[in-house]
Amino acid sequence: MIVGEDGRSSTEKDTIERDDFWATTSNKQLNFVQHIKTLLATHGRAAVVLPDNVLFEGGAGETIRRKLLHECDLHTLLRLPTGLFYAQGVKANVLFFDKKPASESPWTKQLWIYDLRTNKHFTLKTNPLRREDLDEFVGLYNVGNRQKRKPTWSAENPEGRWRVYSYDELVARDKASLDIFWLKDESLADSDNLPPPDVKEAAPNRRNRGVHEPLPEKVDVLISGTGPAGLCLAAQLAQFPGIETMIVEKMPANIIKGKADGINTRTMEMFQAFGFADKVKRETYWVNQTNFWMPDPKNPDLIRRVGRVQDVADDSSEMPHILINQARLHELFLEVMKNSPSRLEPDYGWEVVGLTIDPSTNDHPVTVTLKDATGVNWWATRTVRANYVVGCDGAHSAVRKSIGGDRPPMGAGHVGAHHPGRA
Image (cartoon, rainbow, N blue to C red):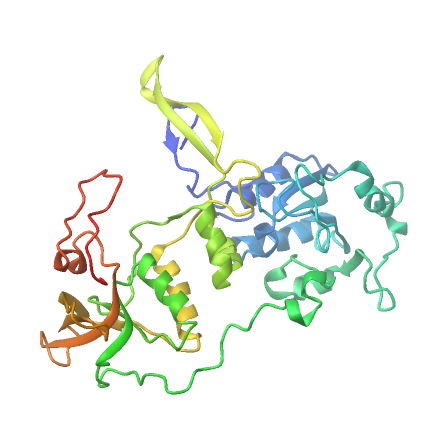
């Protein structure tokens, strides 16, 4: 929440409309670039630290980059080490540009890029960035005569960190993206260290799927509910085709709107195991600070900020605290499942209405009763036997009720009571 001089409050996601801005957007970093441009006098110079999304974001981002290249001399871009200059885990850059008078032809002729990120490993404490680490860049910048700059990169020297791109090359890139890198990441140079392909080789004798295919009679694990907990477990088990897994959901499809959109740093670390942590970081809103507000003692009709704290403590995690639509999170887990060796997919339209446990046998002792809501046979029931049943079906869990568990009171620090058996 932001309170202006007139006492009016607005959220940080409000769209900013100004006649002197190139584009209208709610993106604070893009608005920051535009604001700096308006403050500069003609021939004024700026060096601005900005996150990577300013370099590649489409829509207003593309408009602003093209305007910046045309109306200013954007001459230098320094790719900074990850997480040292902006926020924990954020990839940032320094953009150097000069404001110029109106002109039909673009002022930017060349953009020089120095890569201080690839294969550089700095930390805030054990290996901090020092002044001497910038010596090569400062020398190559050639502040006395930028026209006599010389690149260190060439076809003969592909490891050079200082490279130049022409205006025509920049505007020809998709969305005029300035997210440019050319050095080979040493951590990926060895094929043994390459990340596994997204799509795994399909296991033989997989279950046939389809609306008219019968449900299996027996499975090793049956998961009830396709919330984040159920999908996370299913995505893990899907990597092991020897464990026959089934996940059922009474809804007809994945949710559209989220119910809980916050993801903490430890969960983000877990996403690395599934291979989509970087994708989540690119797509989401990062919570870097938390602000506290109270009524203004001098004018109770207004509010004032009384505190601001860093959201993620330094060195607690390399991952950020983020906000993501829960439906999108489901999609990421579903993609992992579909690309797994077992090609696991949820059985939508099937609701767990009860289960029984046969203590006299160890051969699939749990019998689960499912109610059909698929539209093929409305409200008909089917039974599936399982070795294990996992209830991830929420506060009104049919699995919990079937084993005699009670819904815990709101705010309780524990869930239910242990019940013998395998459910």
